Every structure is written in C-alpha cells, then in structure tokens.
Length: 142
Image 1 (cartoon, rainbow, N blue to C red):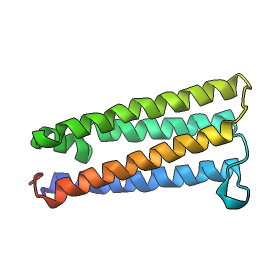
Image 2 (image 1 turned 45 degrees about the horizontal axis):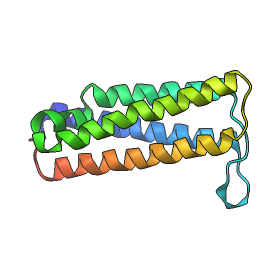
Image 3 (image 1 turned 180 degrees about the vertical axis):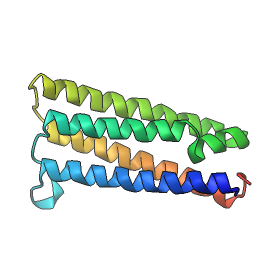
Image 4 (image 1 turned 90 degrees about the vertical axis):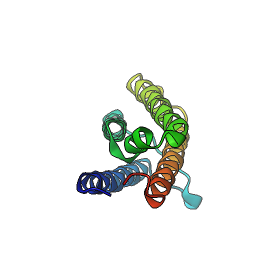
C-alpha cells in the first residue's frame, strides 16, 4: 500500500470512528427503555446535524477512499462498490424524510424509524468495512 493510500485509510478509519460516535450520540438523544428500545423523538436540529455528518462521510468515501480505489483498480469489485454507493442515496433519503417530518412536527413513530435508519447505516458500514478489508488483504491496491 502506498503512502497516500495509507493516509487515506487512516482518514477513513477516523471518519468511521466519528460516524459511530455520532450514531451513539443520536441514540442517547432518543433515550432507551429496557431492552434497548429507542423511545424519544430527536430534535430536528440534532437529526439534521446527524444527516449532514452522514452526507459528509459518504462524500469522503465517494471521492476516493478505499472503495473508490477498489473500483478504479479492481474491476471485479466495481459492481459491489456501485451497490454500496447506491445505498448512500437511500440512507440519506430516509434521513431527509425524517428531518422533513420532524420540521413539520409530524414525529409519530420517529424513534423506531430513526432506529431503523441507524440499523441500515450500521449494516452498510459493516459491508463497506468488509469490502475494504478484502480489497486490502488481497493486495489489489498495491
């Protein structure tokens, strides 16, 4: 792995840690009952800030990052990378819908819906991490 790729990997690892911290902060905002069930409704500005953090994280990944590198250097992974990038738009659209509903004071079951988006984001991040690890371990980025 070249020095530049190592720098990018370090930036992405730090970004993933920051995203996980933001997810935990949002869960704290929502509160929990026994069994880990989210119960509250986030304030619109909190959810909007979280959405902006997620969007910035996705932009970093899409502008290069390890997934972008895999797409450029290993055409065999291009399809999976495109699928992962497509999930970015779906996750952001879900967050945009929730923010709009909170802005309109239609919170309803927003805690459960925010929880579902957080679950989707966790699954997405796990898939990206796995894809990046496979790419690095096979030496295809060297």
